[in-house]
Image 1: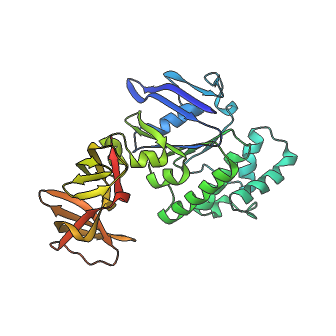
Image 2: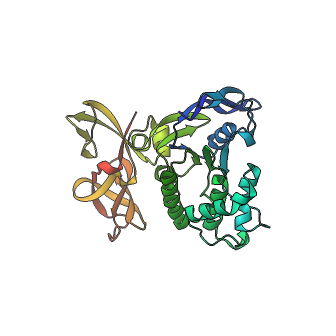
Image 3: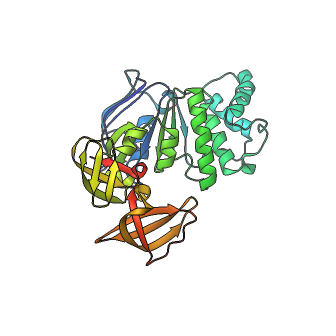
Length: 334
């Protein structure tokens, strides 16, 4: 195990920003700290780097306690939201700064810069001024600078949140490919679920300074530990049912899920209910067009639920509709 965090607590005065955090990151693994704003994600990351004083607990690397190791000697690479590039230096000089700070001989700089630019998809950009770069290009340069001295751990604090949606999605895909190809050990802080699930092997969900759930991406997504985590992971409707031989019966219909027999609590994301020719009747109260579907708010009896219809459908408030559960949009809670 590369990084080990045990019972880590960080206080700001009497306020506990992080409480008793426990984490493990193996060599070559990417772990995402996922949670809403103010949940303690960035504070935990800063405590791991040594930028934030620790009230109690420990951070160690391969069993060696890092408490007495200063930030610049922990051999960690950092990438922040704004990249923090030097505007008066060109791309090559920004990347070489990371090499210079770690004592890499000057004669090796040019070859390493060229290698890194190829790695992040910016070949030939050595002499480009950073003020001439797009947001995505600037973040690639920041990433290259952090990777320059070959850190044993890469820490990414909301690295894509300052980019527009389309660019953020593409850069997340490219970054995921880079991390896996290079077998880089990384810790990512994000509030964006899609970003976490694109980049990470495992996720730790934080809320109010505590790690509420940690595990493999698909496991956390499909089986949130409680209602709070489920809501953060996109669940909008909770539904109780009874499972018998893999079939769960609820007031909104039946659905096949891999669960034990007995009572079960389901969490429905907006696409957990879909329009069908048969199913539970309801009345549309609102309809909003998305890129890939039509999102509906539907009144079913005394309840109001979210549902989706095909992008080409034409539903308006007051229209009758029938809904059936879709297992792809349903989590098992608890």
